[in-house]
Length: 314
Length: 148
Image (tube, rainbow over all chains, first blue to last red; front, side, top):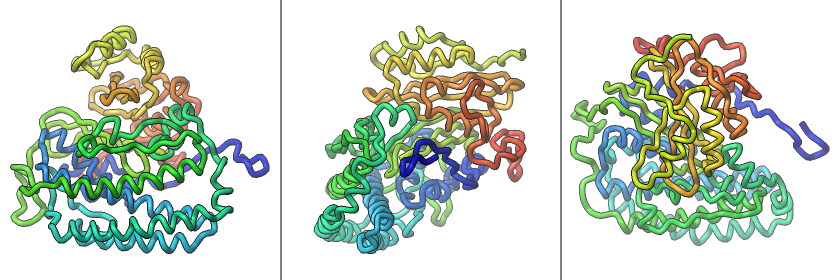
């Protein structure tokens, strides 16, 4: 409901987008759900692929080797950069800056090419497998990531400066849609949107996974809670993510990319994948749009008995 | 009223839960709660700092329902888990929307897919499926392929 140009109430309706993800999960062996986990957020598929795979690994009690952990971390943080570039582009388009849209999408395309090289697809991957990685991240590919980061770190400040110089852009964001920290928590807001309202909640800092502690992850927050604050949080998160990608690649040791006993989709197809005992696992990750959580309940077979996921409200 | 079958843990009251989480070290972080006390338990934990409701979901154990709550305090990494067992014939539990307004969406989804009714909810509608949809697809009685 509107009062002049102010939205005073609304009843969100997501439309008929339900795809029966959990029912699909309960009717597949664990490893066969990975391609669907990618589609939980196809703009940031690596984040959800990692969340699902790490939940299965916790259920089984399987630790991926260090090289795989560092490679995963580099790719989920690069995925955050890609996701935030998509946000920058579409936000700019909506606010009448098609030039920024084209520039942001161009940079995103370059990184999607890198994803295709490393993870086998531009949008959805199946690169992480239970217990490790399907393919190694080669030194040549790591160098390619670093070269792309060199470029992006040079051009991105120019794009952002152009965006921020635009008076209309600022006017449409500053002081608009302010959300208090109290409301953010009460309504379950997470991710950049909650942090822009001064809620210091980022799963990477709150319950660190991968190597966020070792690499000194720095959470970005703002107090104002308006659209401009949300813009600033995502903008600064891109910089932090680029730093983390470099740090993760630097930390990546030589070694195997699959844990002992990890199955692979490549021939010979090993279906000897470890089957979880009765039990359940609950894992949270900081996905680009906010907190992602997956709960898996095992009945001891190699099919999940119950899966549930909580989506980000970002 | 049908009995909750064996296998469900003995329910604990809010004071016992608060005492349990106050114990330093690796204390239990999952608690069984009676459905009549779920709002009290959530309100007590909310007052104790569990400001973030991460997930409400339901499980069909074929002989009972279970509603599971994952609650997060920003100051500590481990969530607290509340589990409420419901008799199979009575898929009803009080809504905790009075504690976290955002609980409504979780509860609507759990109703939509499993048919567990959240009594006293300010908005009990389905959330994902069409309003005139019949049945609850995540129930084990609903077959998909040759599995449920």
